[in-house]
Image 1 (cartoon, rainbow, N blue to C red):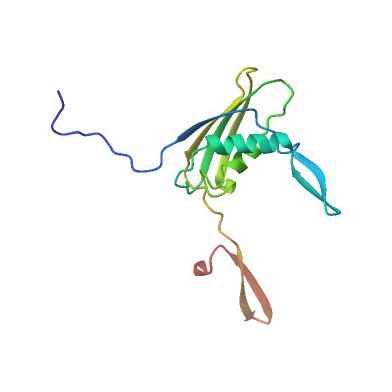
Image 2 (cartoon, rainbow, N blue to C red):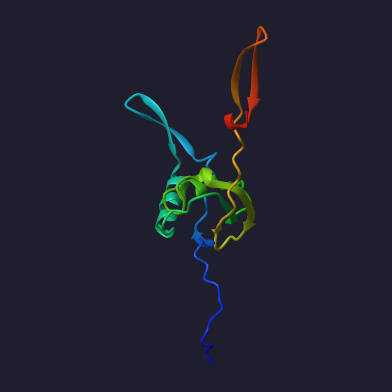
Length: 160
C-alpha cells in the first residue's frame, strides 16, 4: 500500500560520486621522460602515463562540474608491490570532467591495495562544507596622532 502523503525528504544538494577506473595508474612523479624536439629538450608523460590517461578518459564520465570544496577517497589496486601510492595523476585527470580544478580537493584519503588480476582505482568524490577563508589582515594607517604615525592591524576596515 502506498501512502497518499510521502514525508520523504528530497535532497537537491550534490550527492557523492563513485567511479571505478580499470588499469594501473602511473606515478606522476615517475611519469616524465626527456625527449628532444628540434634541438630543444622537453619533459613529456611516459608511455605508461599516456596509456593510463587515455584509458582513464575513456572510462571517466563527464558530468556537470562539482563546485566548492571536496573530499576524495581513493582505493588504488596495483598489479604488483612495486608502484608507490600516488593519486596525483588521477586527481589531474578528473579536472574538467568531475570538478573544475583539483585545488577544490581539501581532504584526501588514499589507500594502497594489491590485485594482480584486476588493477583499478575506486574513487569516491564528496562535497564537504566550505573551508572557511581566513580573514586577510590589512594595514590601516591611522595618520599622525600625537607626533607619531600609528598603524593598526585589523581583519577588516569596518572593525576600526
